[in-house]
Amino acid sequence: MNEDHDFDDLLAANRGYAASFTMQEFDGVAHAGVAMVTCMDSRIDPLRLIGLEPGDAKIFRNPGGRVTEAALEAIVLGVHLLGVNRVLVIPHTRCAVASSTEAELRERVSRSAGRDATWQVFHVVENQEAALREDVRKVRTHPLIPEQIAVGGFIYDVDTGLLDRRV
Ligand SMILES: [Zn+2]
Image 1: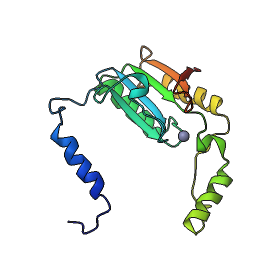
Image 2: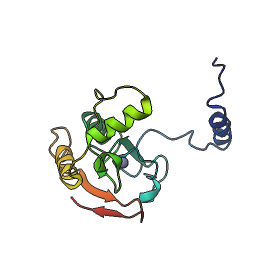
Image 3: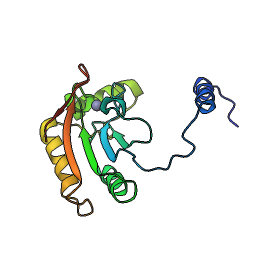
Image 4: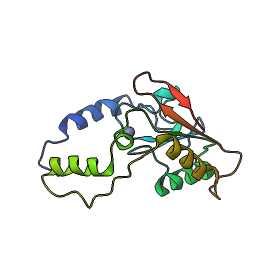
């Protein structure tokens, strides 16, 4: 048992959540057949922004919403074992990793940490549109992701809530 109270508020909220929990019968399948790769940004509500609910989709998040090796691993599992037939790649406007240089991020983290952070890699995006095209290409050309899987690249506007298809 931990003695600290760091998570007390969240655990209290969780007990409330569990009290009205209704997903006992849910399997782990994506019921809407959707997988999404998007950014960790707290302004993004991945399910609701496309009208979905828990149980409907597989969501993979990282800084920038990039199609990394881990994201591809998730999509392959989603497609073959979890009912995914549509994949959305969704970076967003005003994203920190797309509007800073690696040097700037290292500088800001160094200042916050009070110690050297120049060894820390941040996968900054120099050209968001080009990165999105490349990320969608990675999904479409993956040998274990069949051609009939729909793959789209979109930019999410954090100021309007709208998705704009780019690829
Ligand atoms: Zn972001």
